[in-house]
Length: 257
Image (tube, rainbow, N blue to C red; front, side):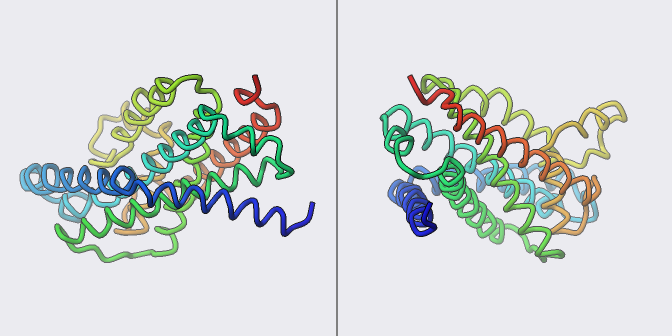
């Protein structure tokens, strides 16, 4: 296929996704900013004063990376699952299925849209955090790479959810009963060194733990897990989800009736 056709198709999907995000910015950007502001006030200011330092930093500084990565995870996943399922529900996806675009381009377009929203919200949360504390980024390349890869991983996870979803209730099950617990138990608000040995061992099976700590290492220079394990877990999860999404799209699972 002509590369120009592929590029135009990809750019069109991305433009549609970004336009959608910006058109309803009151739903996509503002609510996460307000929610995270409340987290900073309640956990960082009120509870943090009683907790004191953690990992050599004030509690407010310690939770900033976790809250940023949590917002990126939630919004990358949420954008993908709502957008792609909306295309299924409105029968818009049929236009893409009959187009000459390869499925990997369709996947890349939707992932890029989810990535844009996740990074936009992450940037907003980071700016909000500066009103509460001071952050000096220790390893910017690690911070940005972990942030980028995490957004991609959860955009792909959102695609899987959207493909299998048959009704609107189905797109809320995974975020509520799987994503939220894993996020809150992924070291966003604490170091796993504070946990009993048994729960430390259980925590290492939570992939979000590696993403939170990888991002925290990039920002603050401290982490509960090794950097190698962080990249290993993220890249492995991304590869598995990417292949799974392509297989499902090629088979037409949940898309063809």
